[in-house]
Amino acid sequence: MARPLYDLVNNLPRHGLTCSLLGALDWVVPGEYKNITSFDEMIKNVTGSTDEAHIQKVGERAIHLFNDPSQGYQRALWLYQTIDSTQGLVGMAAFASKVAENVGFLSFLNRLTPKADTTQAIDLGMKLVAEIVAFCSLNGIPGDSIGDFVESLTDARHETRMRLGALVCVDGVLPLGPDFIIKATSLFDKMGVTAIASNERFQRISGMIPGNNSTDQVGFIKQGLTSIQGWATKFVTDQKVTVERIAGSLKGVSSRWEGSLDWMAAAIDMTTDYYEHTGIQTVARQCISRAAGEV
Amino acid sequence: MCSRTRMRLAPVLCVLLLCGALGCGGEDTTRWQAAQQESKAQPKAVTEAALPGATFNKFFPKQDGDIDIVFKQEKLGFAQASLQRGGSPIGMLSVFDTRSNPEARDKYKESKDSIGGFPAAVVGKSTSILVADRFQVQVQSEGEALPAEDRALWLEKFDLASLATAH
Image (cartoon, rainbow over all chains, first blue to last red; front, side, top):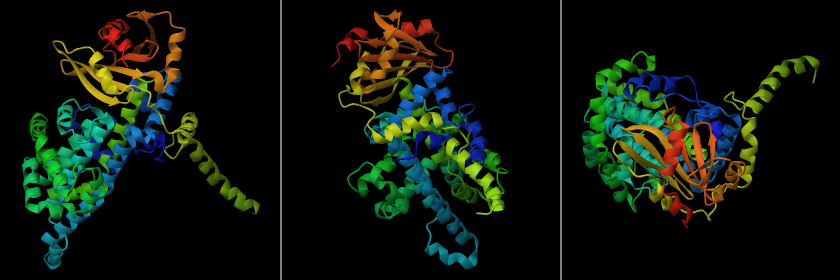
């Protein structure tokens, strides 16, 4: 059985690089995100209730709903956690690749590690797929409902909006540029199904990706990327997201995030787990929101 | 164990005991532990006898003018939608088959209020009614957007007569 829901929320950090990253990107989703690290506070935030007896009932029902594997909350949590536990590896591969590009005598590493932009494209695609499948699992709809997911993007709120904003900035615009969706899909085409399917990150969550075989699954990822293009373009325009603005807001947060943009993106990959952090908050909010209607 | 060692270990033991009661996040989790234990012994939270959530969608209020109904969770025995005005959420609407949590019906036993002919209960910023002694219909306000009288009006906009005969 998964860890208790209240422990997951209560053990979220209040400080550290992940929190600093989310704080530094607040301008992308102004006023939308609050770092809630207490299960009790999350119940109060979702229900608006101050009645302790009611809070108790809602919390208990939320615990029961989360612990029932058939309700899909644990599956969503697994996705958010797993996609982040591979994140360090993406950063590492990107780092090794950058080292190989920048340091002549290490150039042989180029033969051993993938190019940074291809690893970042895979990272972006995998995180997006995790988001789509987790969304479907949380809301009780079939796992390949890309259309429903895309429709939900405009009214995504709280932690989900924060996570999507961070995805656009840190895994999209920063490493791949403002036209990151076009660049990522073109990189997917260049890599081909075999190369993507042999990727460690793909293999980790492939059991959850809709499709009967690798070709279908890679097709699903590309379809996911293409489908959010309209939303992503509007988001970047509306929030005035530029590489310079992202870099400007992140520089100075940590000395480990200095350097060129792709170094910065790789360093953030290695030192933060914003997907898991906000994913736990999203799962808790969903369980509590439902529980409030069931007590 | 010599007394000096015991003295050295005492603060460590205190911290460990405190960590056990509060959880490592520093929050007191005592109030949730019984539910967690109960749930571990019986992980099923929803009965198969409940109606599918999709059954309830057609009974929700309809979109009208600048009012949007955006469906959210749809699980066995439960359907939920966000009520939005001009693109901003003003409330959360839900229908729940109380067969999965019969205790939810208790609050209507003493109820003297009714909405649409069904017993009603107000808890904090939410108002609920119990339809046909089985389906809980709820409107929860987003912040202060929906006072109690508005919540009652929204409850009456559900197709309560059809819901009462849902099967």
